[in-house]
Image (tube, rainbow, N blue to C red):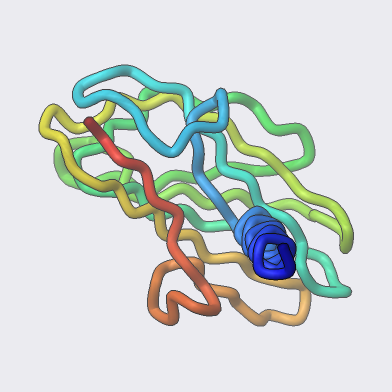
Length: 149
């Protein structure tokens, strides 16, 4: 009985920690999608410090083709494209106060082949510090993953 309660508490703690990081999910909140499918994704970024987030940079995984963005009031968006005209990075500048979060929605076409997408996100705070959600240190800054089936 004690082990079951301890396990439940540990699971709840891990879920709350995982939910606190910058994550990319489907519009309905899933971590998987179909190969070759058009999908609406959401990037969720909470401010985890006592100072504001001022910039969010998303590196688009290879094989993902972003087709459009939803307007996010209060944010300016810029994109970086490769020689083929595909979006490789997106930067949103604005302000996300402590204890707040922001969601950015975008539509994309998944790669034709199954695999795992790794979404690298870099969150800049008002003091210039950057938190890397890119698996450089998976324990502290895990990259968000999407399984393409």
